Length: 313
Image: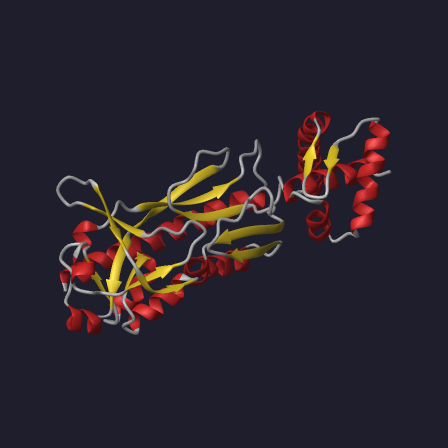
């Protein structure tokens, strides 16, 4: 029996939560996966998994074994990359993830320039508005917009991003432009919401003088699943949208959107490049971080500068 293969399968089962999900992820038959783990348990002389019709759980021995297996597999992975030269030369595949719209508009051009410079590196770019799990999905680096939870990840801040409220000039002329967040309801302005994994019935603002939070209840006229759809709906006059500044800046510059309630904007959120904490970083990751960080910082500064230009008009 291939011990490392069985370890990998066991770890995949614990990460996916079921044998069938792990089998799909590893692209192996379910019967093969089950047999490999049973053989591992037989060789160790102990049960690692408790299987029922509804759930799967690790035994006490399984918890300890999986923790050790993760360390062993990570060490083997590092050793293989060391042998392949990833720690001494920029080569191999790099997996990068970014929010859908920001990735398409701003990260993709940086990736294209990076690939032109480093011919021995390939990149798989995952664009998704959900936060991809770097460990579980084997992602090397991520662009994260927003406050980061406490974790073992290493984060390099590359800028900040405003959260803006905007609408088309047409609907503002027809309904009136809000001077206070409460005017959204008083003026009968319809709202556009973006469906997220943590939906909220409120939009949070910040009082100009005190800086205290001000939560305004909204009843969306339209709910969409992507920020790009919200931008287009706002441009078409469907209602008021709450967006990250980069999502709205082109529409504002073209006169198709107008930012309102600027003095009530919540605090700008940080933007980071994030990667898993490791003792030694492969050269492909080091080169990408050194290449992408200053360029994305320049992009974010340009978006911030757009505020000054628009404010002067």
